[in-house]
Length: 291
Image 1 (cartoon, rainbow, N blue to C red):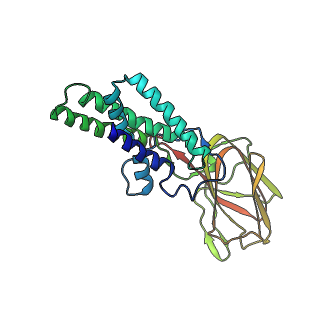
Image 2 (image 1 turned 135 degrees about the horizontal axis):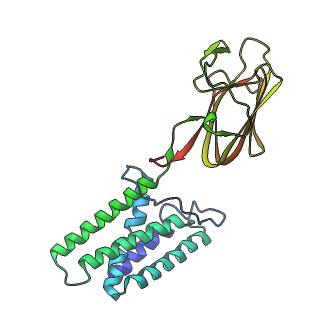
Image 3 (image 1 turned 180 degrees about the vertical axis):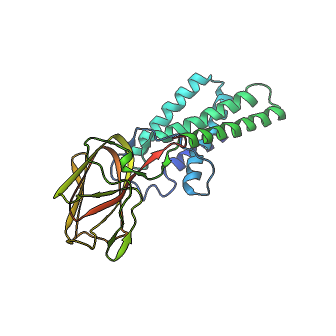
């Protein structure tokens, strides 16, 4: 009993006061209610990994000690545990000593479940050296299983794809084959994916429907070729909001890669006028390993 109380106090200290929480507390309540993923990847020598590992491992002893002391069944134990964690997470947010993070609730609960499995394997009946070894092995296996699931479900940056792979809303298409080379600021440009230009017209519009894609990065190059008038403009509009207006004044040089993240994109419009050009326009999505 004394050991359980001491360990509980230690965990509460880390939850509310460790990592300089008092001096770095926020000035507003923070509640993160949407889970990101199972938050424990394969081992990495980073603070964030050890922090995520601690969020699971630190609560394994509760899954062993509490049932061992009170012989409580799993349903009752896990219900009371989740309720307690929800209260503690809420107190963290209300006292500005942390945030309410549903990922932490999931991590802590997984730790308690692993501990309860270890209790059932090695401590629920007559304790023996063999049962203790199997109990320890079950903890390792379950932790490894969580890491495997986390790695499978984690989204990573996919390859940059030409914007032309998206479904177009209009019939206007950029050049994608036999791409012409041109010179910008004395540097020869060899486009690889596509070229957007007004093609002799005063203005040309390219419109795409991306279908509410999430966590998207937009990449492109902008320039005004040396031959012809050094005048032109390119606009990029995302879901009705103009995010870029590029012209000769905003020119950054031939090989200046422009990039912009978006939480969600449905409709993307490119308007090119004058002698301006965009090329190698592409998007990168966050993807699972199997996508």
